[in-house]
Image (cartoon, rainbow, N blue to C red; front, side, top):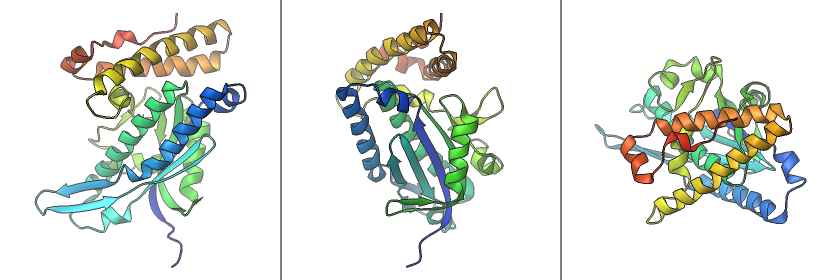
Length: 269
């Protein structure tokens, strides 16, 4: 069978500050990093797409391909399995993929934050081969370039190859336009709800996550400012601002049930 080099929704993500931290961190943190990467690799089975068109009772199932190398993560969804069904128009197909990726991204960001990392990435649509441990294609190159040259802050910026497609960007709740004109995934709103798997201990585990990450953010803001590390400070300050706004967009009743308000997230002094 010929290798399938096809149009895919493709994302490149990495952990900010990974190289510096991993060279001087303790064994416990190294094990946490390794555990996160192993868990991420296993997620390829947890995020199958199963969406039905009510009128025809039609269901399509796809799974993302996920590869990790050091702190680099590549996630891709093939478009053809959705588009081949006439019942799924482009807008529905885009909604399915963006929804599934946003769920995965929020879980990744919450887990990374727990061990002290912010994430950054780039997303695009283009030709890609992603199977059997091999990732190759123009989509990977563009996603990497967006992450390394354009994103700057801890966000996953969306390529013009996506934003130029109205059915991928109009009325989609997963992507927002930033003050600099760049579109990125709004994973901040769902971060609180992605910190723990659903279950009877969900509220308790989420509260423990908050109790851990709030002082972590405050400590980073203070230490980076005191050390004059303004480049890193700007990224943590940007993230803290976005997280406060994201929590503020959650329903008031839900925040009350957690005993949380947006003000819990610290700001730079």
